[in-house]
Length: 359
Image (cartoon, rainbow, N blue to C red; front, side, top):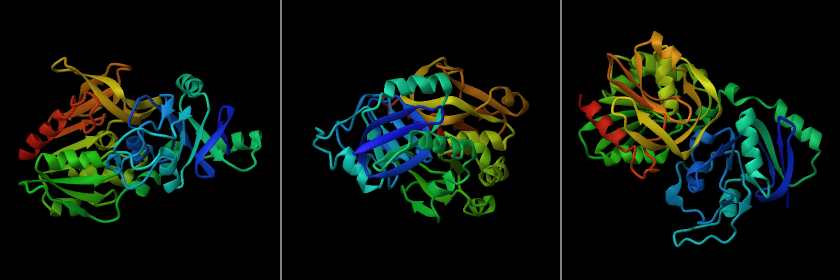
């Protein structure tokens, strides 16, 4: 089954299709992990994006449902160098191709992902189209890639990933955490519950007074997809919560909290996506390895005008990885502390969260 990939810069590649026949559009992004393709494909933060692992062979250990970070594949399509059709893993429940078929996701293999990664690093993440099967005109597919909406303009990404009604999770503890769902990963919820913290999960468009009525010990703003500056409703809700209750955020949540306090965000050239990003704590000097998945970040210059302080930095490009408020109990991190690349380098976040909730 023939497949095609077109980029807005005019790049047009042919390969072999897997998953389902059809077409998908989105921002083509690369991620540098050697493992974790199941977690990545089901991470709601990839909504609106076409995922491309840099590791050449994908699917080696199959697919296991316990690795899902949401209920389904949330990436728009998958671009890889080589597909493993016969995985070796006693826990595997299906192949990667079967996984994509199950959720109607197209995939393309047999393309030069090394070349594409170098291209993205030089030019930045690009709009793209993947088509599996059918007749294709190169010029038309490239134009379709160019004409689609930019990820910076897509306001529907978070609403697509957020829950519709309040959900409750009991850890039989005394502490209560309210989590605003912008597209949370399952592992975040599991890490919080493992600390004995009860969680009430709220839709992204919940008003602040509804959250405060439930009298939580703190509020966590989750990760999620897209441009944080478009989320006026969530930003307004968080603004109302400042000074009323301890606040924390992860990834997109950190950006939303920063915006609510008056800071600014910007789009990274090609983003941070992988499990090998070094982060330095500016107070202790400690360096740890983090898992990351974001295309936007908080501008350091904008912190000077608000009461936020950068406490951790990315050693690859000096972007902000954590912020704290000078007066209020507010702590937010840009990376994913629930993941385990170190393997446990960043779990301390949940200890700090628990202490903050205790007051």
